Image (tube, rainbow over all chains, first blue to last red):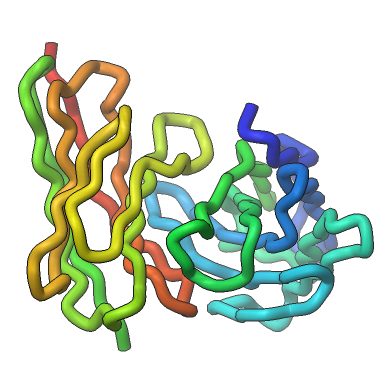
Length: 116
Length: 107
């Protein structure tokens, strides 16, 4: 158990629908990151939050949005789902906001989204 | 744009050393080099990181070139449990992982 909790573990839905993925960071971590991993692909960075504020954005689609709440958990909202959105979605957390020597990412086990 | 390159795949025999290379030619002087690995059906996990000097921990060693444009992750004695995709991650604000090297360990 890495300390980063992601729910749900698996999710099957239909095209056009909307889903919410949830992430609870490791205790003490203020920064949350979302990554997408399509089948046999690498990790695509989506977005980062630090202490409730958006700090960095990757190639996140306009149909996707995220937020980090006062208790530091984060949610990734995916709407108007398409077949191509089927992927593993990983959340990671870290203590700091930038890339310093102390800022190591701890990943959750992921949420597998299947869009039919 | 920063570009990180890694071999797609590598193979090693069990209990032999493995050297996994990564090229990160556009890394800045203050960016740490991180390595993560992803075991089958799991999330990525941290392996090691360093800035300029070579680094060792219980999992691996990291050798960083003097010009910092490349680094090598060294597994001193590969085991079957080391079979994974290894990602090089030159730090900075782009949060982009390298493409990863799939390591196969043969018994």
